[in-house]
Length: 103
Image (cartoon, rainbow, N blue to C red):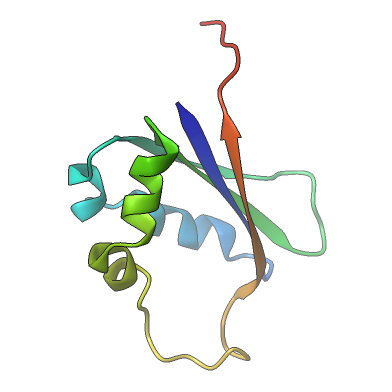
């Protein structure tokens, strides 16, 4: 299993407003290999907010199919805000493989 994390920096006050966007019902749940999404908000920051959107997939190939799909493009098409108006200050994507767990 892999976890694709999108670490998103936003203007202060926007993380909690944006978090539900990533967990609303949609086509994502029907994609082969999709397991779940969880959204974490970093609490020890004062200059900006930070969301960590973790998407769990069975394989990297499953995630790649999602990333290259028309559904992905549709899900990531938003209003035509200018970059200046966007609450997003930046983002970084990392891909991790689960090596060990304890529940």
